[in-house]
Image 1 (cartoon, rainbow, N blue to C red):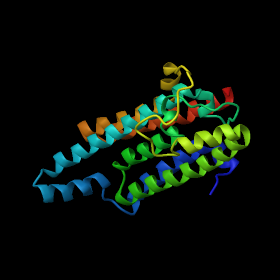
Image 2: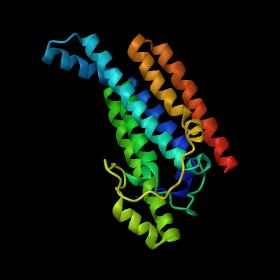
Image 3: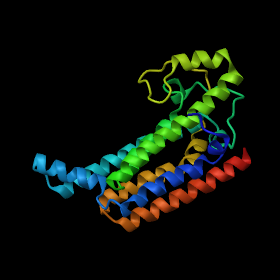
Image 4: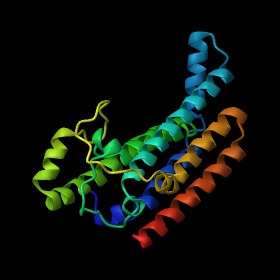
Length: 234
């Protein structure tokens, strides 16, 4: 179940392929996931289907904002060059900010991104992106955990026992270590996530597929470019 070094090094590429493959499933299922749910809700609740769809797309945008915020918060405490490094960095254990609530806030953010973006996919695509992102996230987590335990030993084992792996605790599970966040660096590293949220928010307002794909394409280009540059810098 543990991810390989190749998977970890090329995780940005794999994330992109997961999204791309999921969107491409409109070729086998032409029904949009949110529209299908909106039709069902409209029939049950006597609501206008278009209004229900807009509400669902707005909810998806809120999920993406929350995912972007979680990733930005995490990157503010974990240097961007570490977030996008080609190898697992085990020199230090970060236990501040979101890392007091969940051990892997970046991967939790990825699951939220998958849920939010899934609203713009077909029904089959929605299930694929959520399942694939969750499974791939766990593969990367298991690899990182093994490396951190080898490096940090008992310190990491205590942290692992106290803090949940992927699904956050509402209250902090470990004392703050006193590290200060770099919010500017966090927003710079996760700018692409906010692009995802913006693309769905614009679609919820305008229902313009062209605007959605234009913003999404720019966001993906920024993601691959920034992750590549940060890996080299790291």
